[in-house]
Image 1 (cartoon, rainbow, N blue to C red):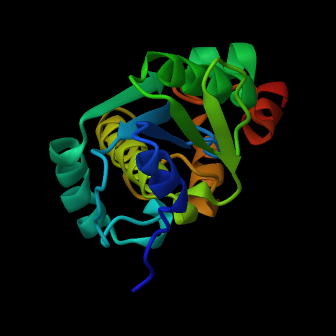
Image 2: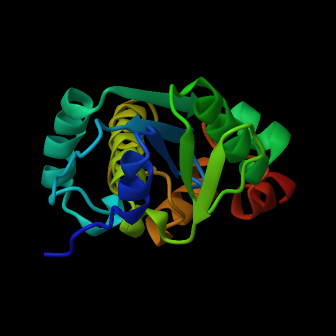
Length: 200
């Protein structure tokens, strides 16, 4: 079993500083909201089950989703709707949501998954942060599970696109459904495959 790193946490905790880990879920899909989450664990926290949300099973993610919320001393989950993604672009929408969490979080140190932020706190943007930091990994789980729950519900409202299964990502089934059924209000009009159908 892969174990998530926590060297950044240990450095902060050694200095009695609190640290927030921030990550997102849903930058790549053609449909549905983006979710961004932040997590602060108590100083000295350990949990070998927490790892990059993409690398663990759905069943385990669901279990950890509850566990993280119980164990964290602070957490926040933000939903960024399709309209904001289309208006601002996905990078800017992600950055603004992460910045909002970083500013609100009662901590001195901020860790993000490869997103530089400019604020009056110590910030580290880590490539593959969800494998290097237990706090970022926990945030990735909160964001992904929250988003998955919404996509299952949207699948009931917009049948035929396979959203419960593909979670809005551009699978073959989803792309074919877009051509056959057309786009819906939950599709990201600024994304290439969706924009192409609008223009046809």
